[in-house]
Length: 213
Ligand SMILES: [Zn+2]
Image 1 (cartoon, rainbow, N blue to C red):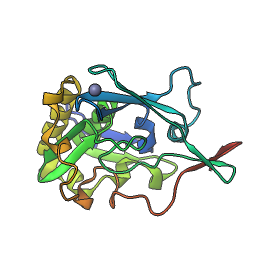
Image 2 (image 1 turned 90 degrees about the horizontal axis):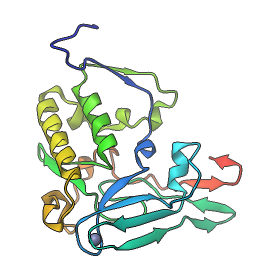
Image 3 (image 1 turned 90 degrees about the vertical axis):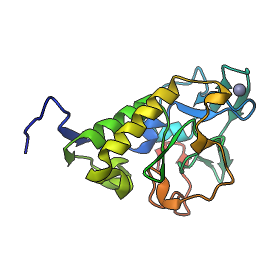
């Protein structure tokens, strides 16, 4: 089971990284110019102890192209902070379309940033998939839609991930992916790369003083 072929990545250990782990830096379509903007925690904040904290920390959207800047803060309600909810192909804070989107086998493949693309590539390219996560329901990889994991799609998905990696290098409004262009297009619920139903199941992330729940 542990054989290698031509040095190809053959094993992949799913450590149970939740999608939130990749939410630290999110490339989005700038709401002002349509170029590439970045969504990051507000500068000067302490590093989060848990990936889930990333959904509660104040955020900043900044565009290097046009200079647009926007802020986001978690809403306080009932003594707790209401965190951002990860959903399909838009950023969870400003609800902007993700910059890294592309069509793939009739679906929409997306990622938050290059680190996320690399992690997906490592998983999809692996021949043997293992799981060691303590919280498998939180594991991003276990929740990938089946079309991404099908062996007959592997080459297409890997090619599309290379497309996303190249897209991350570009930032002009004209470089915007067709997949990120039309917000009025019908949403294929099964197309989201990470959530089978693209929508949270009626819950919001709530962070109380003392730790994440
Ligand atoms: Zn801009």
